[in-house]
Length: 251
Ligand code: PXP
Image (cartoon, rainbow, N blue to C red; front, side):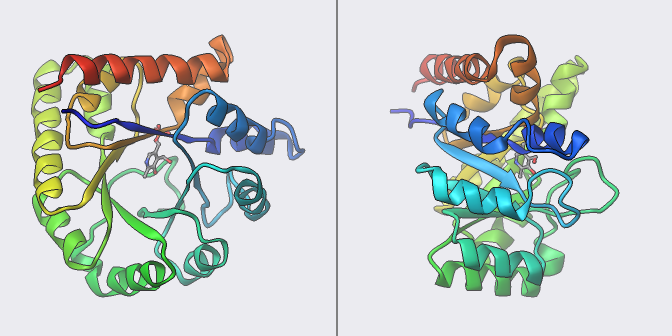
């Protein structure tokens, strides 16, 4: 039977809007509470080195208020490691971070940074924090993630989702196949398989139909859509599309 697909809601861009004026409105923690009541299974935040959206104080408030699991996305730096060890989120998702990028552009190269990532993963695991590595759907990166003791990999869906948005049909068939094969491979190694980045109502269906994926993490589109239909409706509609896709792909 196909497993339940968890939905993590990333609230970073509520903070982006708040920070545009430097005040306290809109409050990302209020949005996190609404996301939980709309059915989010976890709340995701990316504490960036330049603090362009979520702040350290947001993270403190979030861990105080939210009862659902929190995923902290962070770069593999000593500063972030100290913060994670202090706040002990349920999961840390290690992402590559480039100061000048608008958003996380590609997956982590686990192979070339294996010693560094191995040390960070070990410190987090010793504190009981699950570790997910945000990678491209690539078998060698998955094997490397497994070898350093990660609990999960999050497969980067950005290229696939862009191909759907821009109607590059041939490309999108090939890209979803790569995600599906990578997910199956990771699952066969007993890694938890997550996926995310760039997911929209239009692209969620095929990703959600991959039965070895157990969690999707979605932010920008949901927050954007909430301008038109409200945050709760925006999340509920995504949940509806996920369930519909999961149901129709039952083996
Ligand atoms: N997963 C990871 C690891 C990310 O870095 C992001 C973006 O912060 C997301 C998921 C969510 O991507 P989006 O905001 O495009 O839905």
